[in-house]
Amino acid sequence: MKILVCIKQVPDVESNPEIRSDSLWINEDNIAFRMNRYDEYALEEALLIKETVPGTVIDVITAGPERTATVLTKGLEKGADNAVLILCERYPLSSYETALLISNYASDKNYDIIFAGVMSEDAMQCTTGPMIASFLSMPCVVSAVKTSIDYEEKRITVESELEGGMIETVTLSIPCLITVQTGLNQPRYPSLSGKMKAKGLKPAVIYGECLKEGFNKSDYKLEYPDTNVNGIIITGTTEEKAVKLMEILHERGLLL
Amino acid sequence: MNSSGRYKVIAVIDTIEDKILHQSFELVAFIKQIFPDAASGVLLVITGRNIIEECGMLADKSGFDIAAVEHNDFYYPNPALLVKILHILQKKYNPEIFCLTNTIRNCSVVSAFSAECGFHCITGIESVSETDKGLMLQRSIFNGKLKEKVIVSVQKLAVTVNPGAFQLKQDDTEIKSEAFIEKIEIDEGVSGYKPVSLNENSDMESSLEDADVIIAAGRGIGKPENLEMVRDVARMFDNAAIGASRPVCDNRWLPYRHQVGVTGKTVSPKLYMALGISGSQQHIAGMKNSQCIAAVNTDPHAAIFSVADYIIIEDVNVFLPVFMKIYNKRKW
Image (cartoon, rainbow over all chains, first blue to last red; front, side, top):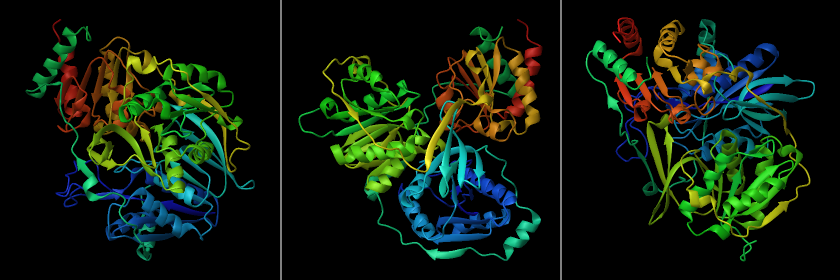
């Protein structure tokens, strides 16, 4: 099996992002970056296949500025064999650009499966994976929560999540692209030996030809959401807050 | 068929097992906001195995022309085949915009189609307004911590619209114009992708929908052992159930049947207590219609507070023991 896992480096969204003065992106000073959580599950699914199918090779790939190489190193530490950084100084890239760059790279590599996260935590578009599949004319399933491979038939059966708690089962012929939901496995931490091994590996760097920007800068901006809090903020010491909340719930007939 | 032989807007009404998903009608509200007088320029697409019978009702209800596409492989959601249909409709009617409801599958449809056809693709639209330069579309990024606004011209555009973002008005659905129903024949499906079955997630059966009170835990509870406090709070109420945010289920702290949100259960209990839940967009969409929402979180900027009736800025693991102690000493 030859597997490609698409990984994105995202700003740590636990922190509250501050919008840059040009309103086109966030201020990256003092921001931590990490692997997109959905991609952690995508990588783990590939690693699980590698454990059961001898000879499986996993490549991890990302597109972005130099700092994004850290997620590739993390991928190598976890057990990927090779890493590819498509270096693009302009950031963020649109999902169309990312998909084009990755599919151009993958087009002559004969991957059996391409894994990606169902979405990125920052842009939340759910578009890059399906676009890559489309450029490579591969079948694609989104939001996988379970995969099982039939090697003889060169076919994968995927349970894929729909909104509202329904599960659709689909079969795909190999080669194919699968975007994964969180929860389909338990992503591992890098082992010590994995970290040692990764020290000797460096991501291959290729220079991405970025396209013209999709939007005119004047037609695009980021804003803070309307944080109108309409509710009642209960103040006081912890005890006072607890008493007040309990009284409110009692008065409203919710707590008897 | 309208006189010009083309449709300005093509919208896809979602179906599962030959049943229309009524939430897709909200697309009509979206279309009417951007094209108030567009009735004759709108085509609704509906797919299924035997779907033509549903179309009369849809035509009456919307006043729009309908294209019914029947194929065995459309009994279950089939994004791969839907992309093929969009190509056919694009060639036939040359629309300016394709609209779909924002689901993960439909995002894959608009992105694959856009990549192939040079359309501009924008997913997860929450609101729209007119500007001199074109339409301004707004969507959430960073889990709702920021909003992205983009001005686009309505030309070669494929979008998905968030469920619940555009509400149908009563008169939107009472048009009785003569709508045309067209049946689109397709010879074969797509190779390499085949829907096989559709099941309720067996892990999903729960009492969440029937509960009067939902006590929901988020990552803020820190570790699974702390769920015991959440269960203690639930025991204070009659007919209470335990809810959870998706990360709590992904971490296997609770089974997925407890998950509230777009990919879990949508609930509207009398009381929803969000404990240590920051409020991702997909979680809030699943619980915002609760009658009373109380939220406890350390982060004063937590998105959950935007929908809460009662806000307590505290570490839930500090607050809950005190809350329990006071409950046990209550005087009423």
